[in-house]
Image 1: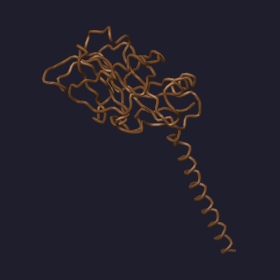
Image 2 (image 1 turned 60 degrees about the horizontal axis):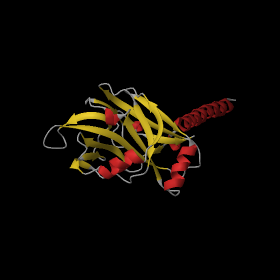
Image 3 (image 1 turned 30 degrees about the horizontal axis):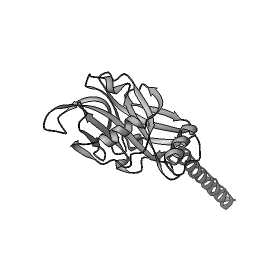
Image 4 (image 1 turned 180 degrees about the vertical axis):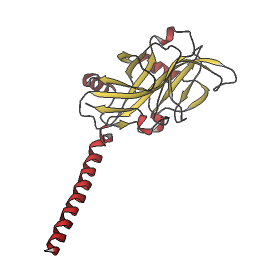
Length: 227
């Protein structure tokens, strides 16, 4: 009789332990959503391009552990004197496994400086990987590409420490792929201020987390999802 009770008690304890273990496994699986996220592939696949005020030379910041800055700012970091810059964000995503669905672009705004008003989001022709220029150089070829090839997606009003989510319809994605690229290539997001070329008040810009700069958490990196 005592042996039977011991066997029954052991069986009950074992059942409880197994139940807890399997429940824990299910919770971990349900919380893992990274499989649906497509992150920037290489560190020089995203960054910012900035032209100095007179549109003669500029900089490209990629791989520099800096946020993507979009707007008008003043700095002495890139030349021997303090200059005014107009900057835009560029982000390239590998969509080689795209299956003709809508795409949601996700990026976290980490700072709003001054009053940048609003943000315009575009698709643009792929410039290829960005070469890091942290001193003034001729960046006109990529800058002109942001002017000539941009396809408007929408206007948005990012808030500090909030995610910006932008839905891109499959027809727009398909048109730029069919026109410029074959399957296995990239598509490129362009970020700029409303009518940025008409602005003259410096110190107004957004800052966004990048593939190599997400101060709070690595999960704050920009990504896309197929919908």
